Amino acid sequence: MDDGRATTTRGGENLLFLTDEQLRQGIEAMFFAYRGFTADPDRILSDMAYGRAHHRAIHFINRAPGTTVNNLLNILGVTKQSLNRVLRTLIEDGLVESRVGTSDKRERHLFLTEDGHALETRLSDAQRARMRTAFRDAGPEAVAGFRTVLEAMMDTEMHRTYQRLKESGA
Amino acid sequence: MDDGRATTTRGGENLLFLTDEQLRQGIEAMFFAYRGFTADPDRILSDMAYGRAHHRAIHFINRAPGTTVNNLLNILGVTKQSLNRVLRTLIEDGLVESRVGTSDKRERHLFLTEDGHALETRLSDAQRARMRTAFRDAGPEAVAGFRTVLEAMMDTEMHRTYQRLKESGA
DNA sequence: CAGTTTAAGTCAGCCTTGTTGACATTCCAA
DNA sequence: TTGGAATGTCAACAAGGCTGACTTAAACTG
Image: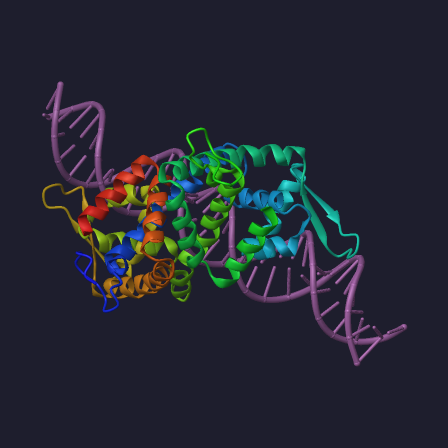
């Protein structure tokens, strides 16, 4: 019953990892890690007239080619006015192509152009490189735990979206 | 040697968790989880004239009372001008107190007032509640993995800052 | 078929939060 | 004691969120 550590519940389950101090460390870890997570693409984008919003749009258009504007809106969780500003510059600059829907002509389907793919690759190579190093240093079990906690942290709506994307790419 | 799964290295170490698809899922998990991570405090703050930047300042002033503006700057990773705007409103509104340094009068030492503490508690209760649920659902081993990966994802400079805070609060 | 709803886009204006540049004050070392 | 470095403040600007009002075109529905 007693595992030799300081605190156990009646059921023998150790809840030391749920102290306020542990939770605060988790919160701060998220804060600092997210900075690292976005640092590399941010650096690349700061040279151009683009920002993180453009990166997100490019990422998910690449992930789900032919997605509609409305669908992208839901994934990104911003207003259409906000997305539209970003999308307009990407289309003007020839990184994204917008095709009128065939079955429903109100819809626009979004695709990366060749240039768009080139930038996507550049950005995601940088971001994946960091993620790969972190994953390798941490090992497969830590990675599994990482993903378990992140999924539990999402809003249910976001979690559904995440799962849908995951299944589409697996 | 062959464990029945698709890919192993010569050393028998399975690197399936490092495929581009796995990395991309990790990237998307970070994106969606961070939204959940900030959602609750954001909701509370949207009713006031404050934003996420105020939350961050309040969090770290609470964490390291008496910290100087310069120190806070390094933790938050923004320019002093940007932080100053946030700090000024917090001071005007009586949530933060700024005391001129005794040994070095150029420095300002920052403290939360009673009202500041009240807001800090409200914000961090909300954020911790989500983190606690996520941690409990995932279990202690997943939490350990979560933190291992996040630490590996930080820039070395950020990692040092994170460790310093962690030790000061343990 | 008329009227309503839906998808997308636009314009205007606001807010938060980042940025740079210029500047005042204070400290310290040559 | 004076010049440079450090600290903090003020002003102005840009990115990227937001709301609200509106248009156009297409699809749906009674």
